[in-house]
Image 1 (cartoon, rainbow, N blue to C red):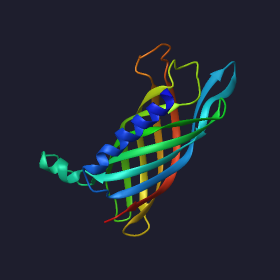
Image 2 (tube, rainbow, N blue to C red):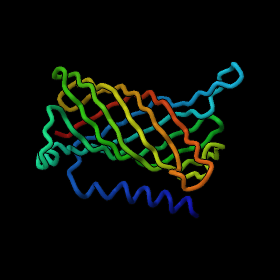
Image 3 (cartoon, rainbow, N blue to C red):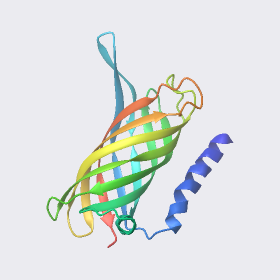
Length: 190
């Protein structure tokens, strides 16, 4: 029953910002994530899977300008619910939501490198020796680029680094640092 309440809280926290601003776009990313650790001259994959991120994009540049922050590029808040399939150490699932800021700076009209960063919350069905709890926090940073196919549609490639831990709520809390390689599409409504 606790799992149900955790998922319900994640969804509620994710929906609140939807009522504050108009949605400017939707981003869908997937790919691969994994952790590799050296053990006695052999490399063993200890935690890997296939992510699915659905980002709800809100343009926060007008808000930033009202408080005196001027940017040459695009500044977005991304509410990113996710469901990740865990392949190793055994079949499981991660689910939750990320809260990210993304800054895209146009090099040309079609090509825009970007940086992302933020926090998230998650529930993972897998029990790991690194984490005492299945409810965790996600600190992350990403770099990528998007190429606009037309005025509203872009394709993206992204590298993301994520640190998962329970913020010392319980021990052990060794954290799991994960590398993501992602690709996807973004559709902007305006």
